[in-house]
Image (cartoon, rainbow, N blue to C red; front, top):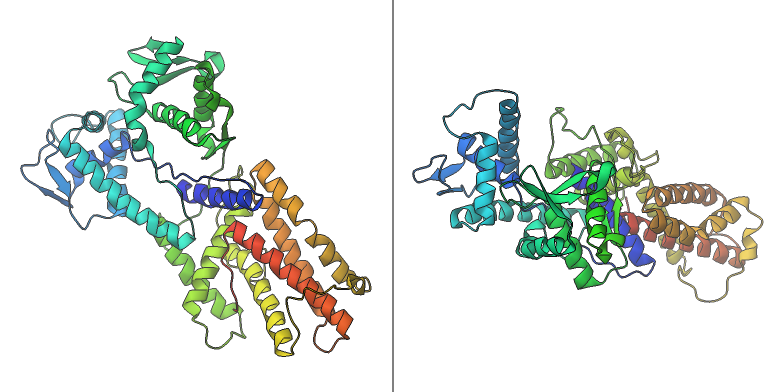
Length: 463
C-alpha cells in the first residue's frame, strides 16, 4: 500500500502549498512501463485461467486478457510469477519446459520497447484496467492530478537521454551494461541493461529533463518511499555529472512503511477493499459512539466521510519518515486524537452557528467586534491566541514537507474549542459578549475547515 501513503502525503502537500500561494503542478507518475509487465504476461502464460487464446504457447503473445480481468487479477498474476522467479533463483525447476520466468519477462519487455503489436495490445489492456481503477479510487479520496504521465510517456525520449549522456562523456560500460560511475559512495549506476532495455532510472532522467524544460519549476518534489533514497541520490548524481540544472531542483520526500493494513480476516487488502472496510467500520462506530444522531441524515454518507477523514488524518498525523502500525480502533476513535474527533468538533461549531441564526444573531458580521470581552475568560483567550498560529503552522508544513504539525495544531484547536464551548455563551449573553464569543467561534470554524481541507479530511455539516 505504498501508493496509498504517497497519494495522501502528496495531495496534502499540494493543498498546503497552494494555500501558501505557490503554483503547483501535480503529476501522477505511474509505473506503467518496465519489466513488471513482463511478469504479468509471464503469469498469464503460466497461471492465466482468465486468458482467451488462439494457439497459446510460451513463445507467442497472440492472446489477450479476458474482459472480466480486474486489477486484483493482474496483481495476483504478477505476484505468482514473481514468487516463481524467486524459487527459480534459488534453484527450483520451471514446471513447464522452456525459458525461466525472468527470461520470459525480459523478452516480453524488449518486444514491448520494440513496439511489437501483440505486446503493445497486452500492455495497453493492463494499463486501461489499472487507470480506470485508480481514477475511481482517487475520486473517492478527493484527489485530482493535472497530468497522468507515467514512465511510458518518456519512452520516446530515451534515445535523446542516451545521446546527452554520451555527449557529456560520462557513459561507461560495465559487464555489458551502460552506466555512470558515481564513485565509492553511490557506485556504478546502470542506465541501460545488458540487453539494451531501459531501466527505471533511465526513464526518471528523461522525466526530470522534460519537467525542467516544460514547467520551469523551482522544485520537483518526489513523494516516494524511503527505500528509494539511494535511487534519488543516484538520479541527482547522474544529472549533476551531466551538468543538468534539474539536479538541483529534485527533492525526495521519503516515507516509511505501514504494517497492519489488512482485512478483517487478516489477509492482504487492496485499496478499494481497504476503503470499503473503513466505511463499514466507520458506520458501526458512528452508530455506537454517537447517541444523539440528527434525524434525516443518510448515515452511510456520513460513514464514508468519516472513513476517508479517519484514514487521511491517521496517516498524516504520523511523521513521514517513521514506520507505524495502522490500527482501526485508533483511526476511528471519536473521542481520541483522530479525524472523526475533528469532524465532530466541526459539527458542534455548525450547531452553534445554526442556533445563533435561529435567534437572529448573524454568524458573519463585518462590524467591529470588541475582543476585549474575551479577556475575562482564559479559555477564550487561549483559543484566540492559538488561532493566530495557523499561518506559522502552514509555513512549517511547506518548509519541512511534513503534515504532522498541522494535524497536531488542529487537535489542539479542537480541544481548546471544547473548553471554550463550555464557558462562552452566545444565546442569552449580553450583546457585546455574545458577538465576541460568536466571532471567536466563527474564526475557529473557518480555520478548522481550512486545516481539514488541506489534510483531505471531508467536512461534515452534522453528525
